[in-house]
Amino acid sequence: MVQLNENYLKLPGSYLFSDIAKKVEALKASRPDAKIIRLGIGDVTRPLPKACVDALRKAAEETGTAEGFRGYGPEQGYAFLRETVVEHDFRARGIDVSADEIFISDGAKSDTGNIGDILGPDNRVAVTDPVYPVYVDTNVMAGRAGTLGADGRWDRLVYLPCVEENGFVPALPSVPADVIYLCYPNNPTGTTLTREQLKVWVDYARENKALILFDAAYEAFITEPDVPHSIYEIEGARECAVEFRSFSKTAGFTGTRCAYTVVPECLKVKVGGEDVALRRLWNRRQTTKFNGVPYIVQRAAEAVYTPEGQKEIAENIARYLGNAKTIREALLGIGLKVWGGVNSPYVWVKTPDGMTSWQFFDHLLYDLNVVGTPGSGFGPSGEGYFRLTGFGSAEQTREACERLKKA
Ligand code: PLP
Image 1: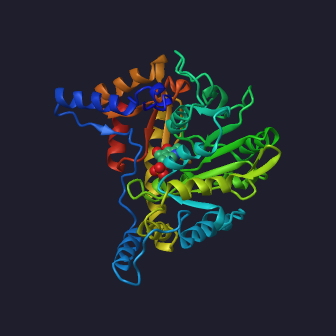
Image 2 (image 1 turned 90 degrees about the vertical axis):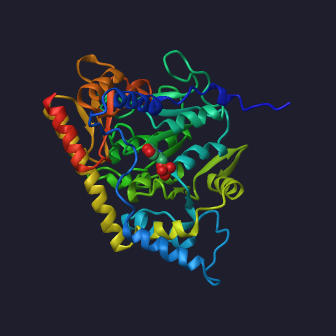
Image 3 (image 1 turned 45 degrees about the vertical axis):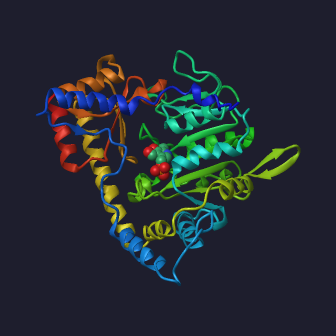
């Protein structure tokens, strides 16, 4: 008889975005004239850079010729893209990473989810709270999370609250953690760690033989000099951290799909007295379960690093950051407490007057016709907070902010 992976049955339904959609639809039905503005959006809205579209077109033409046809590519990604990534994202910043340590993939979502395949079931996993839900749910699927309590916490996960009281800087875990997910600039809070603050985690991981899974999907939004672009800027990180990057938010690839993961050669875990390189296991995992990103998409990703590509992505990111700044200033102007929006497209706001995240959602939706995302949807410590994003249009963002200021 078939047996299921019953860990999947432990997962609660993922209702956050469907609940939001239902409320918005109901409002539209009852008040068809309401001009609803969506500032909850977690997807990019600007078109793909022309440099990427040109590269896509050229590569597509090439694969339609006998000489240029490509079948299965290397599972780790083509050398042209891995070498370009190393040159621009690492060597240009003085960071030591080699092309053999880069694994091109179809997304940071898949990679942050799939990395658990090479980790044992008994690891103690720590997550910041609030958190990008993929880290939690994939550990539930793997049986590493335990049981969900009435307080919304899984009893085998170690939660690292990031709240106003600690300035959104997670404290080291009070119980030993073997695997630690860190995402900076952070989704959903938009906050960052300085080099000094990140070093505390690298030192902890080295001392405790823990593994850091560092999600830098929003690296391109960093504007402040003391915020590290890569965890490998921190001494010793190559021995304890895997880093995830993505072209999704950087270059508008959310629908085109391309990302990469860095697994340093010297990142090793002791197994029965022997050092095993994580890179070897991740390579085995990828070559078995993944057949690579399309050639044409990798050419498009390569074009991100051309001077035209760089100029175009910088303009798009500046627009999103400009929107985030508009939101941030409007909220500060009406006396709310706000974080993020400086090195991130996400603005995190404390709900006023002790309102819950959903009460604030309802207020914004019904009274101002503005849609955001309740912080409680990202974890128990997100209760009492709310996420707005700079991914909308400048005009709609300004209009939404006018409504906020008048409210
Ligand atoms: N990591 C974080 C923190 C994200 O917020 C997202 C997308 O919203 C992803 C990863 C997914 O990236 P990708 O589109 O490369 O799968």
